[in-house]
Every structure is written in C-alpha cells, then in structure tokens.
Image 1 (cartoon, rainbow, N blue to C red):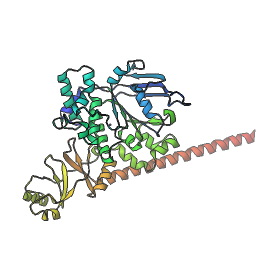
Image 2: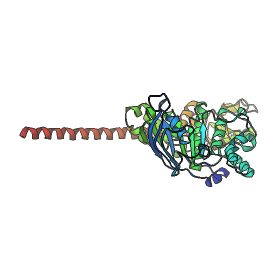
Image 3: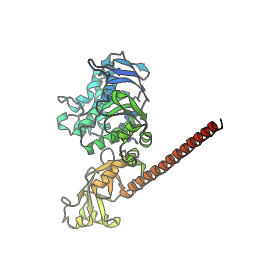
Image 4: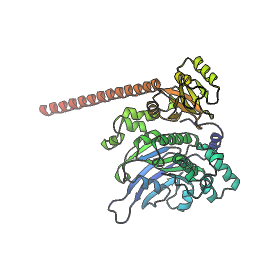
Length: 423
C-alpha cells in the first residue's frame, strides 16, 4: 500500500520482520440454531507482504472470516496456516500475540496512557523495559506522532485520527508479521480517513507486513489493496483479483454492483500523487518580515504565494490584494489552506482537494505535514483524460472481440446447417 519515508523510522523498519503468507483451507463457521453457516468453506492464499481487502455487503461474514485468522472467533471447520505453520490448534492467546489487530474506534484502553497502550503486547511477551521504551518512541514516530508530545497523553485527549494512529502503532508494536484490520477507519470523518489511508500505505511500503483489511467501502478497497476479495453471502468469493482487474473486468453482475458507476474515475484511486508532476510554488513563512513577503511575491511573477506556518506547514494562500490590505499584520489576510495531500494520496483524493479548495491546486506535504510542492488542476485533468481515453480504447477492443466472436459463431452455425442439408 507508495514510497516510504526516510529517517529513523525508515531505518528501524528496515530491521523489522516482514510479512508471512496466510493460507485458509475450507474455513467454516457455524453458529448454534442457525440454518446456514456464517462462513462456508472459504479457501484463500494471501502472499507474504501483501495487502488483501475483504469487501462485501453487510452480513456476508467478512469480519467473522477475519477474526477466525487470529481465532477471536473459533472456526467450526477448516485449517489456518501462517508462514507455513498450522495455527488452528495453537494456543489462541499465544497466536494473538503474534498477530497485530486494529479495529474501528481504535480500541485503546482509556485508563492507560498512549505509551502504556503501545507497550502492552511487548510487555506481555517479556521484552526488557529499555527495549519497550525505545519501541514506543519508534512506533509513535512511525505513525507521525511526536513522542515527546503524545507519550503521556490518555486516549480521551486525542482526536479520532490520532487515536487510530495509536491503535495502528499498538498493533505493530511487537513487530508481528501479520496485521488484521477490521474497518479501522470507519468511525472518522472523510478527510481524516483519507489521511489515515495514506499513512497506512506509507507504513506498508516501509514495513512490508501481510495485511488483511475488512471494509464495506469499495473505494477504500481500491485505494489500499494489492488484491481485493469481493465476498457474497457466507463469504463465498465472487472475485479475488487486483483492483485494476476488478474495475476493468468484473466477474459478474454482483461484482459490477460493487464497482458501481464511474469506473474511470474510480481508477484515479490506482494512481498516486507521486506518479504525477509535483511542482514548486513560491512560499514564505509567517515569521518573515512583511516587506520580504512583498518582495518574494513581486519577484515570483505570480499573483499568489503560499504562506507556511512556523513548522513549514501550508497555512494560507496570499494574493497581492491580501497583502495590500494587511496593514502590517497577516492575521486576517489570505485564505486558509483547508486541505492538503501526501505523495501517497490517490489522484482522486487530490482532485477532490483541488475542487474543495477552489484555488486550482493542492499543497503536497510530507509525513510531518511539511510543505513539499503542489499539484495543479491541469495535471490532474490530463490524468483523467488519459484514463478516459484508455477506457474508450478498451471498450472498442472489447466490442471488436465480441463482434469477431459473433461472426465466428454465425459462420459455424451456417456451416453446420449446410452440412445437415447436404446429409
């Protein structure tokens, strides 16, 4: 799930355990007094280091299937192999300590600090205190939270997005090869969800874990998954393939229903901001002298400049008229930057941000929110047009293939009819 960042987190991640393959063989769950199984003979192979998304309608058993992998729900039948080891009969508590688990609304313990939450599993498995302390700081940095600022906070003192980041940090703290995620971003607002998705993509490119992720949101599945398993009732697999293959060639009407309208626009979720041109833009900082800001705007040849805060994060778009009215202070001048994207954001995220911001461009930021460049509307629209043209050519080729197939069938039928007539 994009290019990794550098620095301490990146180097620490280099020594982390990579993912492990998961094999499900005829996995079944039956509940007492239920006529049909909740999960019925599901078999699936997930490659090491792969992100697989389980998506399907409510009640199809996708969360039940996920929870059987770490045996929070015990299977009625079938086998589970992780890294080649059959874990079906393993002590479930020991198994869960080897598998990261992140859920909706983070699941943090409210009476524990952020550090205590993250340290929970490493402490259970007997890590020494010095190693745990170092790991907590490492994990906070990895998910983009300042260890000095968040170490001693309690969950109630965090925003929903920050809680989810801590939840992911806790799930990864003991360096498990497998991470299970059950609709982890379903309880946050859309903008925060987009940023959390981007963060997970970045983390996966650094850590290479095996991730199994449950969602009901097909757009989220396209954005995050290396492969997507579209599930019918009782977790029967309707299609298990790459996002691009499902978008361009859905297996049947059921899968097409999940794809929905606008497949070309959905394919914008397959391209990342880092895949297009990120351009520089004239910037100043809030603590720069006002005359220096005037001079920078004049020398740039632009009618607009981007004001950064003291941490180098996008803060306001400033126009010439704003500066003329500033009267020695930038407090009320300019237009606040309402949204940004990272290099790991999808082009669809970037397009939505541009349309929301009404500036014709969106600022691109690094893992700490620092400014790195902008992507403009022209670049995004060129990408949309390329996708639409590719879809048009694919449709023409598909129509041509159908016509050839019909012609061959008609010819074969005519030959058969002629042969019967001669007989």
